[in-house]
Length: 139
Image (cartoon, rainbow, N blue to C red):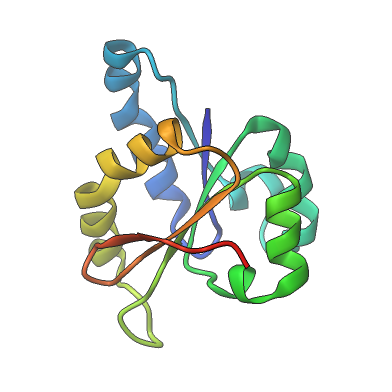
């Protein structure tokens, strides 16, 4: 299974979590590959371009772009292509600092991979600034 980190999160985190996930992949039999949308598709690629491409991967996306959920055609595109979405709610308009994002993802990584493995696609969760993962109801 592939987990993509959106371009609003550092691609270094995708690389780091990919490496950190490797020993766990061997241990539990659930293989996760962590990729950066920015590195795979390029800087500034429209959501409407990458969403249909990652759908066949049965992908989960980690993003701070809550507008994907709020914008009807983008939300429907994610549902149509069977994506799992983890929306990270920033604590302020400034968003998370690099290290705040690292800490949040480290704290929630096991839960994110558990959801990615167990939850039926498509799904959407909101991760609050405090780290609570809350399912978003389908609209």
